[in-house]
Length: 584
Image 1 (tube, rainbow, N blue to C red):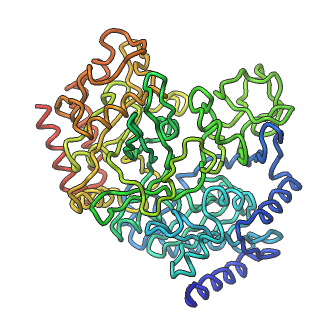
Image 2: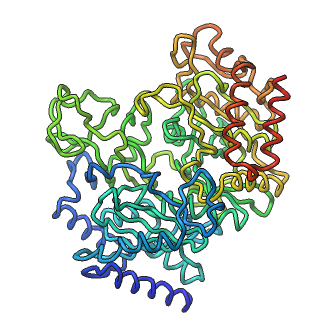
C-alpha cells in the first residue's frame, strides 16, 4: 500500500469516526476467528437465529425491519456535478446538497455501535479486471455478508500494497426510518454513501452500488463494460466449452439459467457457472471479449427456488448460508413458498409471527434472500477465478414477452445487437403490480443500475463494438411466449438447454437460421424437441414474427427513446429507423 493510499484511507476512517462517533473502531481481516465472533455477537443480540445444525450446518436466519426488505430505487441517487450526466432515467441530487442533507444524518449515527472497516476485492486476485473497495459500516450482518460476497481482507490489502486505489463506501443503519434513508453515488469522486437501510442491495456496497453503478462509470472512462449479466460455460459432448454472458430483468429466469442442469435428453451437455449476476468485460490482447465475475457469492431470491427449478442452487445453500426474511419451522429449518415441499402446518413467518396454511399470510417475504459462497456451487466453473477472464462468444438479452419476441433470435451484427439490448423490456405480472402485461423498459437489464446517462451508455456499447474484429454474437431469448389461451408454450427451466445448444451450434456455423425483419431465427426443425410434450405447431408459434406486433413495438420504442433526446446515439436511431423500413 503506497504511503498516499495509507494516509487517504486512515484519514477517511478517522474523519468518519469523528462524524459518526462509534463506541469503537475495528479493522476487519476476513478471518475465521473474526467471523465466529461476529456470528456469536449477532446470535446474542437476536440479529441472527441459528438453524438446525445437522441439516443446515453453518446456516443462520436474519429478519429485516418490515420497512427495509428491498432496494429503494426512489431513494437511490446519482450525485453527478452536472445533472445532465445522470440522465432522465436516474434520480439526481447535487453533490453539495447530498453532502449537506445526508451528511447530517451520519452525525452520531454509530453512537454505541462498532464501526467496521471492511476492505474487499472485486474480481480474482492478481487480475487486471479487479478493483478494491473499502466499506465502513456499523452492521455486523453487512460484514458477515460481505465476507461471503467478496474477497474480504488479505486479498484486498495485497492489491492496495501493490499500488491499487480504492473506492470508499460509507454505510450506517441509522435509525432505519424510511424518511431518512438515502443511497447516494458520487461518480466523479468514486464514492458511495448509504444510510437508513440494512437490506443487502442498499447496504452491501460492493454489489450494485460499486460493481455496477460506480464500476459502470469507471468502465466508460477506461474502455470496458460493467454489466448486470450472468456468465456460464456451455460444454458439448466432446468437452469443448463455449462461454456466454446474459442479461435478464428481474423475474425472467436469470439465476436458474446461470446454474442450469441439462435434462436427460441432452446427454453429454453441461453448463458451468461462472457468475449469476454481474459481469465485468474487457478486450484481451487478441481482441477477444473476456469476462470475470467480480463477486464471490450468491445473493439470490429464495421464493421459487426448489429441487425442480434449481437443484444446483438448493445444493449450494445447504451450508454456510445466511437466509434473510424466510420462514422457519419449529425444528429450525428454513422454508419459503415454492421450495418444492408442502407448506408446514406450523411455522414462524419472515417477521417471526405464527404462520399456518390457513393464516393467509406469506411464510417468506417475496424478496427473501440467501447469501451463500460461490465455491459451494456443485457446477462452479473451474475457470471462475481465471485472472484473464473467460472468452465470451455470445451475449444474450432476455425478457418476459407474451406475444412479441421469438423464443430465440440472433442479431444481424453488433450494432443491431446493441439495439436489441437497448430495446429490452418485460411485461409485469399481477403479483408484482396488479396489472398484467404492462411493458416495463429495462435496457440491457441495467435501468436501476446505470450510474450515468443511459444514452451515453448505449453509445459506449457502440464504441466498444468498434474496438475489435472478434466480437461475440448477440442473441435475444424469451422463455415466456404464450398461446391464444394465455398459457406459456415453452417449458423453460432445464429445457432451455435446447436453446443454448442451438446458439452454440449457430456460433460454430453448424445450425441454420431464417432471416426475418427483426433478426435471424432458427427454423422449427433446428431446435431439438425430442421428449417434449409440445402440441403440433408449437415451435412454429414460438418462433413466429408478427409484423403488426412489431410495428406497435417500434412506435413504443420510439416514445421511450425520445426520453433520451439528443443523447440517443445516432447508431441506435439508425437501427430504429432500419427496423421500420424492414417491417415495410
